[in-house]
Image 1 (spheres, rainbow, N blue to C red):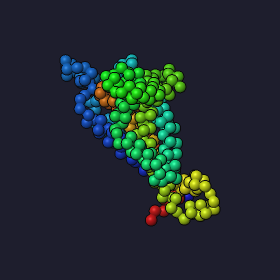
Image 2 (spheres, rainbow, N blue to C red):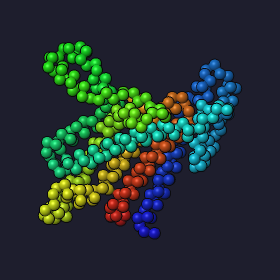
Image 3 (cartoon, rainbow, N blue to C red):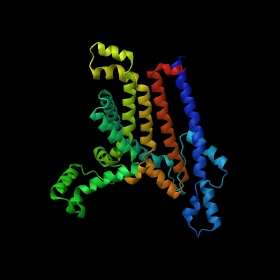
Image 4 (cartoon, one colour):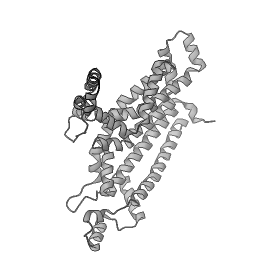
Length: 348
């Protein structure tokens, strides 16, 4: 077995161990959540016997250790269990609840990645080529500004811009401005597409309609993550551009873009892929706030609703899906980094 395959297997084993530890943390954290599903469902007027009967029905009367190993054992077989909202004759599995929500979250993540990754790489390459130029300064300023704001602020500001598109001209603020300025602002706002501020999406929503309704959440996430990837791309390429073989390529008469794309970028993949993977993982595990703001029916919104209703199996499954996605994407980044830079196999 060669060293690359051995290292990949070691990383996979480490990932499985990490996921096992994370499952313990998730189960323990959810078990310590305040409140009880049975009491919350039956209300304060329920008798202790009724509460005990419901707890027995959904398994909350068993010891935590027994419940944990039962949960993990079923998960290994692909069974996420049943929602606490299930009743006799009306069984709702966690898998059937999560599946459409996971599709929506993955749809939003992929849509954002298709916009953000090429944009960040392009901006990073151009910023590195024209270091300290006005373009470099503007791009760095804009990206640092967007990343300085929390996600919910960016989301609400984008929604406000879309709403102001039709309402600005009639506001007192617009009427207090000079006519030319009010007209200019109103014209600028009308350039903004009238994206839906609420993502009303269901299983029957057509593909392109889904894209249209997910536009604002996707733009919000793009503005939040593009700065990290752009700055890392810029820094990695600038570091490579100072290498002797880059000077040799320039002496051979190669153009700046050819030097970057053919010589610098392939050798800068390790740090770039790592930061891209971190941000792609964020697109899956960090969308909770954005999904709540735009009422987007993804796993993040489902998890918030499940925590509110104390539906423990759904909360645990959502948290484990997030953890598994994060660990998997980081493993992929680690493997790609090793494959593109074999020196990482033999650290000094």
